[in-house]
Amino acid sequence: MTGARKTLWDHVFTLLVTLIYIFLIAPILLVVLLSFSGGEFLALPMEGVSLRWFEALFNNSRFYEAAVHSFSLALVSALVNGVIGTLAAIYVIRFAPAQMTNPLRVLMSAPLMVPEILTAIALLFFFFEVGVGNRWSVAIQIGHILVTFPYVFLNVASALFNFDRSQEEAARSLGANGWLTFRRVTLPAIKPGVI
Image 1 (cartoon, rainbow, N blue to C red):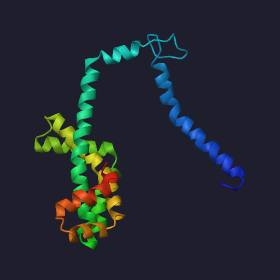
Image 2: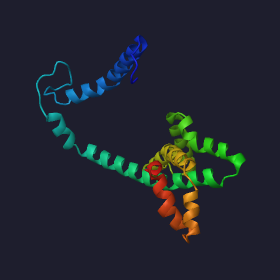
Image 3: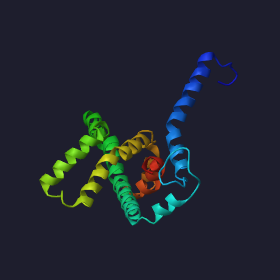
Image 4: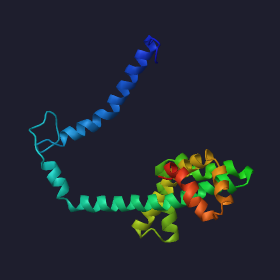
């Protein structure tokens, strides 16, 4: 509120937002603080300061394997969804029939509307039914791709929705083919949505 006096409600609202942030951040700060505890158990007050829990963490091979597996799952999901989410958004925004645009958006956003536990149970039953249930890494990868797909789709769709197509038309009129136009004009414009 520049140039205006704050009312009582403004102060109450600021206090309320501050309390909510403290409520959300306090447990994280507490865990970070307790990670430096020298005691056998994590408890307050701390029994000294030590880095023993960090040493135990980095010497744990199971933690290292889990971190590498999680990172590879995330990387593959991001790459696959970057491609299929962008292609799906381009189709829905530019090429889908007008009467199908909204139903397709709802369909592409469906994993956000269903609780994750229900998605996980449905995928579990589906993977065992089709015979993929014994290969957990494939099933988990497909599940991650499915659950994270709507985020890419919605971001790219909103970037495409606000994109001025006259730039593409200018590139095409200057002799660029479809792929070159996409790579040099469209993709740089929608890059924040894709990333």
